[in-house]
Image (cartoon, rainbow, N blue to C red):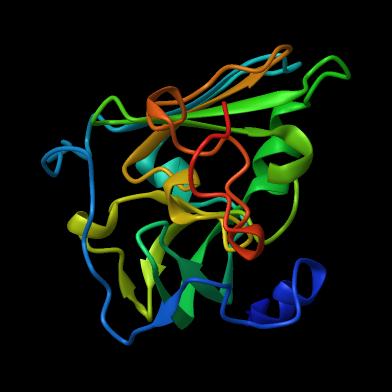
Length: 198
């Protein structure tokens, strides 16, 4: 298992970001209801500024090299849950398989419930950004984004799309669902970047 709980040292002095409270619970928040995908038809796609666009079934995705990580999870609403054990595929693994082009600068994640969220490529292309399908040794519960969600322990959790099924590499920035509605585009918990300054 890779323990990445010390990554806060890159961003701040305290493991618990300012304005956050630690909890052992795992509250459920989403923009709408919980999708119920047919896993026989489920597909994960990678498109945009890449050399090889990908289209993977659930079985093919699960066959990719994976790892388990111990991560912290920070919700923009003010709670943090420490020491979550997520298992899945790292973002760099996906990027390498797709062959990201030199002109790619941004990433857009999209999900089964039409949710989208964005990050600069440099903020995604790190091993702590994980396409997770297990939590604490069990399949990721559907209300927490199962079968697959993105986790971004260096960002507020709205940057980690639940029910993710596609990634697009972009040559210009675009804003996602919450970013268009006033949430921070950068979402650094240690700087309390919760809402846009625009």
